[in-house]
Image (cartoon, rainbow over all chains, first blue to last red; front, side, top):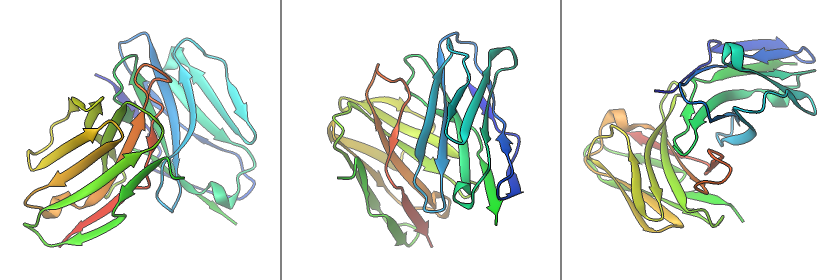
Length: 114
Length: 114
């Protein structure tokens, strides 16, 4: 069975600080995909990134970066120079090849204070 | 045009009533889903349909009945509503076999059972 754990329930930082959201996953499959989704206060779920299990390269997109480490089964998400608009609940998710069933972590509520 | 649209966005009803939530996607995807997000923000899959066929049916009470008249629509009918059914229900779609797991979500339908 697959499982995703986001140990940080809530994080609160001051604007412009860097913040890292942790994600640890469990699966016995060798081919799988990891995701991050953002859920702002308006409620919709916004896709941020997909990473397959064979690609451990870190990725950077503007102020966002992701660190995928298979050795520790982690897929952490860092926001650099955080902004108030980054305040949201962030979900890490996992799907194994062919399953089409996305398993979500519990979510981390991130609050950026001005 | 909204890619995945759900109606209604808000639904308040009494216990024991029957209600439906409709979902439509215009992305040409062949797979659609219903996810439930509880009050603690936990997201869990309920159903998945591929080309109108049910492929995932998690442990969901049989008061919940999905219907897919065509691959662009997946409706959710709930009989004899209970207080515990109060949640946000998200519809999503994806293309099976491509971009595995990249789901496009609707804006959610918040159901409140009184």
